[in-house]
Length: 279
Image 1 (cartoon, rainbow, N blue to C red):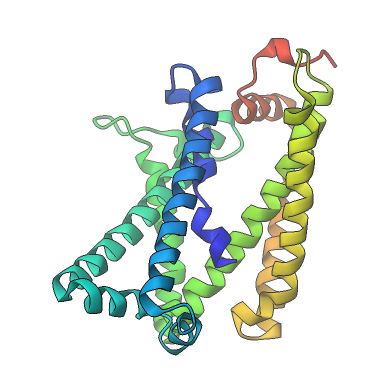
Image 2: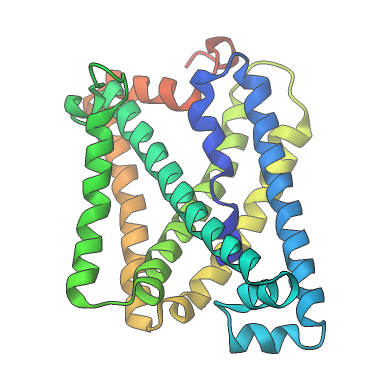
């Protein structure tokens, strides 16, 4: 689950396609480049850790000191200055990840508001900076409230807050990716144009099967991450409930507010009208 969590974010390239001159070319290219760079960087990092700790000793070293293994190896091989540098890079990287996540959530709320699915106030932009400041403030408040609750209850920010919510987020995103893989197949069955069988059926089909297996493994081992079976049921139930709530909301919008539903489709798909069959 944490290995998958390390790759989460590559799909955010699609969120910013409105800023690209040729999104049909640059967005897929940026996505593939991001995945390859992350994969290569992680592979080199793991190789360095294994070589530094020793092939036969790395598992035991990681189990004995899972949080400080990298810093210990850095201090032993290149000195305390570089170990401190790695620590600073870790902290700033965490801040960058949180900021990127915040920006994506802000843009989603902003787009949903402009489409009419959320209150109009979330679609307001700052008079000077032209940024969706109202949506940003709401996203900050939503993140701040559970942080206060965790602090008031005296919970561990890593073992409790981070493990629980990162686990819930990873499970939810993998479920969304699996659903998207099926949606790709369904969409291109109704779309005009000549598209390769690999891109429209085989690749998304293989992706769905792989992601479905991952989801099964995550669900079976979810109590190990959360710490208790009860906690796993609660967090997993919230993820399932959010999926059901989203589906119900979409059905209600399609039935009662078809204009909003059509705008949401246009906003989320970004697909030229000629690709879609009438009816």
